[in-house]
Image (tube, rainbow, N blue to C red; front, side, top):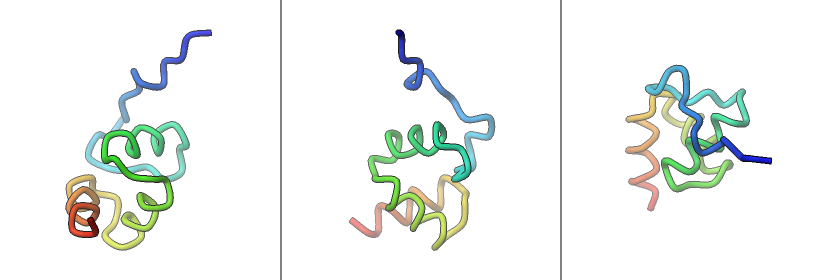
Amino acid sequence: MHDDSHAFRPIDPGRVNTMDPVEMAYWCRELGCSDSELRAAVDAVGDHVAEVREHLARRR
């Protein structure tokens, strides 16, 4: 079976949808973080990708 998870693109590429496990996996790959790090970042700064990316960068 062919895995198309790497071909996935979010419907709203400016926001992280933490309710969708496929989207969470996508953002974890894109941002180089774990699921728990991504959830913590979204909890801290909201779901806007630019703010999440900045928050994750500051934490490293």
